[in-house]
Every structure is written in structure tokens, then in C-alpha cells.
Image 1 (cartoon, rainbow, N blue to C red):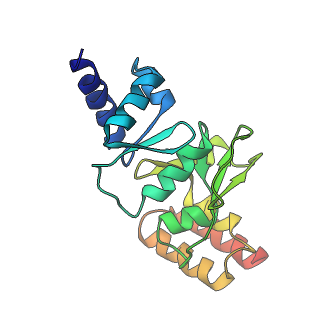
Image 2 (tube, rainbow, N blue to C red; image 1 turned 60 degrees about the horizontal axis):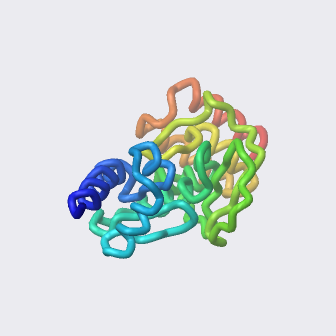
Length: 185
């Protein structure tokens, strides 16, 4: 019977490695692991409960991206970063928001930390969503235009050029973003 927790741990750990060490109760269920198995792993150590339905393996190294993944996973399925959170994720426009904006297509009723701002309902379409280093987010083009009025115009203009130079914006996207920033910024 002692082999079962090790198997649970290994299976969950493999899944968590591609998500900065995070695992959800839904991930566990998809792997055929009951919630009680998660609780048992927490009690034995090495797995920490972060929030409602979210856990993190202690042995996975912390990076500068963990908080972004955590914010998305805490909000839940169909969640993704938007606006200045996307710019911060890509190190653009010299932004460091105190609250990470996370959009979702579903209403969120659970309590979240004050460092997360839920954007619901969202107007970001499927074609304007992507993932950066495994973290669901809106495209850089959409984030730049969503930050009009939030981030200084000059910073957004520099960020658009920087994003294009780094391959985050195509030539057509760059022109469209710059035109919108000039018009509305």
C-alpha cells in the first residue's frame, strides 16, 4: 500500500513540471487520483496547498514566472493573463503591476488574493489568445492596445517596437498597434 502514494506523487510531479510546479485538483482527477490522495501528499510534505484546488511541489525551483501561472490557475479553467500582466510577463513597457489582470470566460465566485484582478466577461477572442512559456495569455498586440489609458503612451510605443524586434509582433501587427496607439493613446 505504500507504493500508491509514491505513484501518485510521481504522476502528479510529472504533470506539475510543465506548469512551474503547480497541480490542480482537476489535474489529479484527470490522472485518476482522488482529492484524498492530494491531501495525503500535503500531510507527508513536499506538496503545499496554495489556494482553492491548487497545489505546488516544493522541490520545483521558483522562477520569475511562477506568480503568473499561479494567478491563472487560481482563477480557474479558461483563464488567461491580459493587459499589463501580459506586458509584465514579456518584460515590456517597464510595467510591474501590483495586481495581475486575469480574464476568464466563466464567472468566478471563489475568494482570490488581492494580487489578482479578474476581468469578466472578457472581450478577448480565441484568435487573440496564446501562451507564453506555458502560461495562457492574450497576444502581445492585444495587450498593448488594452493598456491604452493604463500605461503611458510613450512606454507602449517603445514596447511595440521592442516586441516587434523580439518577434512577438508581426510586421502587420506592429503597424496596426502603432496606428491605434497614435490614434487613441
